[in-house]
Image 1: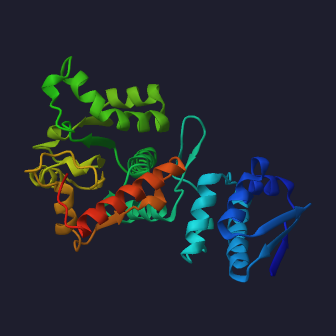
Image 2: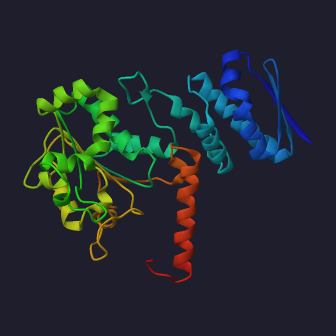
Image 3: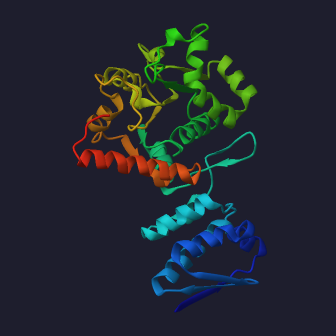
Length: 326
């Protein structure tokens, strides 16, 4: 039986660490099969040697995050455990450093996983960044946050958000209303992110001034986009021709972020995804960085990670067994 202990002299840190009804500590105990006891500020971990070391490392990391003002919850406890198991726990406390911007509700927007942190750094350091991965990994939200940050600091004069307007085989002509009414449902996630960062009134004001544009991808044709932060969302549903058209809109002093999930392609079977082709074509181009997210970067409910992993395993099994599409 191994044992490790340490002292935490701040009651708020201990309460944050343990969580309501010790829910955070219970997750650690169950994951590593250890016993964790707290008497005042003295925390003791007992169990098998390697399990105690990992549990201790997890608690130490979470305390470091709590001391930096991070609220400890099930999501970041499970993420810390995952990284500790992979031997990548040292960098996690840097996630609590600084932030990208502040929402109208006062929430600081910042990366919650190392994958998100590297993505944000990629956007800062490259002209074009691709964020590819499953739903819930913050690809679009963080890109919009970075765009708002660049806009507020006057690095650019315009934010342009776009996405393909035809998805899941549904054509715009079947939708009621004028063109704006037809495309708005497709652009709603982009509006929601901007409302969160700026508030509806400030968003409307900047949109009227032409400083913010939310439009279908077809509206990009024939334009040169200077001094702009341009985000292409749901890029897995572009054709190769559309993707090339979009990439060649880039003007001076501009950045592009392209996001998508190649497991959710809604194009007809006869059409190739422009995102998949771009990942192959652009992988060695200077100034372009491809960032790949996994289920570990999902920051929605825990079960979303399990769903993504289950589908990934199912897909791999079908490939292994020689099944085609079905």
